[in-house]
Image (cartoon, rainbow, N blue to C red; front, top):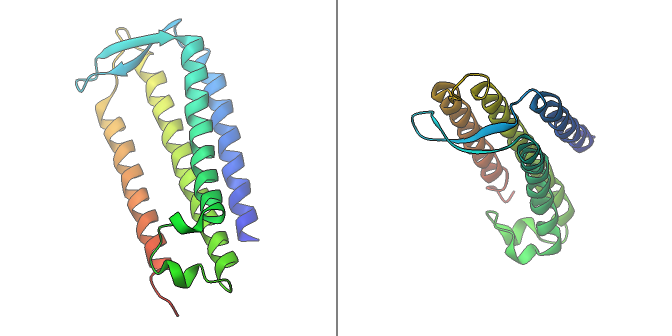
Amino acid sequence: MRKHWLFTLFVVLLLANAFFIMTTSGALPERIASHFAASGDANDYMTRDGYRIFMLLFAVGFPLVMAALISCLAWLMPNITNIPNRAYWLAPERRETTFAVLSGYALWLGCLLVLLMGGVHWLLVRANAVNPPKLENGPFIALLLVFVAATILWTVMLLRRFRNTS
């Protein structure tokens, strides 16, 4: 039951992110500042259509691929699955449960990546709303710090889940 809820959340976030990118990128200028120096000043540009395609691929495709890889590779190639106490957790009597747990963690990571990319897109939309385009470093750093903290928490929880063999 929980995995179905998590899968639904992941799909809803992917669709919402795609919708968000499609609806907000139309207001961007034809030539979009897409890369910024540490100062926040734009130093590379791309077309609006090119940006929209790139961002959709990266904001939807990347989280989808990562979640699928983590979920499927453990099942397809258990010998390369790197979890603590691998022999114990991949024993035949625990294998299906382990794969289900890894799939759940993969979906959580996918959700984090979707939210990160949605945040990056929003910051780029805001950066391109001013002339000349300028990325606000404070919100960008805050977004990255939240993502790093969530990823560390995700990793700690994953490692703790497979720590004990009892």
